[in-house]
View (cartoon, each protein chain N blue to C red):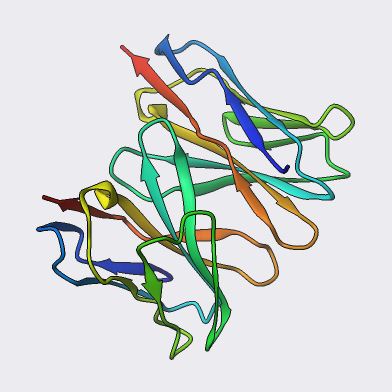
Length: 111
Length: 112
C-alpha cells in the first residue's frame, strides 16, 4: 500500500535556528517527490521537486534531499525566519500518476 | 495571473441543505482535483478529473459529487451535507508537464 509518513508531527524552534523535517514513503514505482509549504488559512505552494536521479536540491534557505534506496527525503531549513511558520507537506507520485500525501509537519518559529 | 479560484471561502449550512463549491482555473490544466483537510489527517483526495467529462473517485468520495463540463471548472456538490463533512476543502489543478499542483485558497465549510 502506497503511503507517506512525515515526522515530526509538529516542531517549535527559535528564530535563526536550523531544522530538518523528514518524509518516509513506500510509494512504488517512484516518480517524484515534492515538498509543499502551507501557510495558515492558505492553499499549499510547491517548494521543490525531487526526481529519482536527484540527491539534493536547494531553493533559497530550503534544501531537500532524497535517498531513493531507503525511500526517505528531508527538508532542511537554514536560519529560520518567522515567515517559515507553516505546515510542510510531502507529496510522492508514482509513475502511473497516483499521488500520496503526508499528513504534514507543523513548524512554529518563535522570536 | 495564474490561479485557482474557489467560492465560497466560508460557508455555514445546515444538515441536508444542498450546496455547491465552485472551482475555476485559468491555466488550461487538464487535471483537477478536490481535497478535504482535517486536523491530523492531512489532505485527502475526494474526486479528481483527468479531463472534460472524465471524473473518478479519490480516497473519500462518499457524500460528494463532481462534474467537469468545461476544462476550467470543477464544482464540488454536497447533495445532503452532514456534520461529518465539516472541513476545509481545497481544489487544485495540475500542470501537465511538471506535475505541480496549484491549489485554491480553500473553502471552510461548517455543517450544523
